[in-house]
Image (cartoon, rainbow, N blue to C red):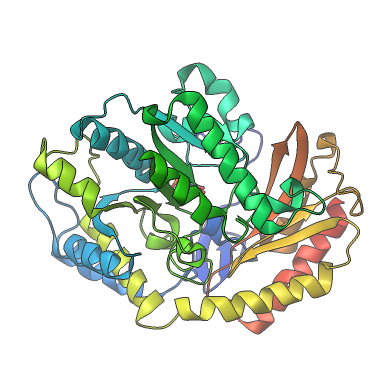
Length: 439
Ligand code: PLP
């Protein structure tokens, strides 16, 4: 009997024993193609020599020293590199251990910024339905996934949710993408006005929605319109790139493709690529200066922030992504995977939509493709896809979401960036088997 408290008390997962490039190997020697990078984590696969060597070298120097007493070379170098690569305006880095921590830090920084600049009445957060920002209480409150929030509702801070930018289900027949984006920005502005614009501190969104909707990018112009509304009302724009950042969508930061600059940006998963747990919050010089000129102290912190071993890993990951050109390959490899998916599932009766950017792609599974009717939730199609894919030797990330009380079933694909042509074919073949068995 295992004494681990598992994610699911009724399922005993196989034990992982090894990794080889894009493959995971269990204790029985079965190989699984990692089609989702875990949950968009393992962007370099599972045996990247340079990252492993960097971790080992750091362990030989010093594994950990508390940031209350010391900074470290890897933390400083990582922050320098991130800022050199980040969208203009982001000037400081706060290093944490994962995505939820990065989002919590972002929320608290926004709140403290307004206190220090004489606007303590700004406390409301507006985010979007069907979003996911993490599982700690602040991040969970910010997210708009009703199922995840429900049991903990009494513990959650007050947040407000507007519609996601989800063209497949939200864009009206005859409505252009521009008009749709503007309609959503107006909805956001109406929510601001309802709350009192000077009581709102931040709008929080994933540039490409990951876990809840399965790789849904915004329509062109949406984020620019949202940015304009934020600017008009002095509201901070917090972008959560925990899943879609670090090259996953074809640019190092996903928001580069939307032409917007956030005031605060959260990153995590691909930053450590699974080799170490690490996340980061990047913030504008304006926010940093306000706190530096005020209390001089961001009232937050975690024991393992800026962990030298995690920073050494992330520094090596960034080196692989940028110096070794791996991130530059994401767009063409993503195009190849997308073309293979279109080819296989473009006319499939149960695949309603194929979407995403780079190597962050999603399929929406439907009972009826013509009128986009979702499957009956009782069929648990997403769980069946996951199980059938796993049996076929493919790890993918199916999720169910809700919109207007409806359910949607999605499969998220976020394979390592090193996925080659044969492996692309293998992924699509195995997914085909899983979808056939599950639908
Ligand atoms: N934000 C987004 C967009 C995520 O997808 C996730 C995790 O899936 C998180 C935050 C939370 O990250 P973590 O699980 O590392 O706490």
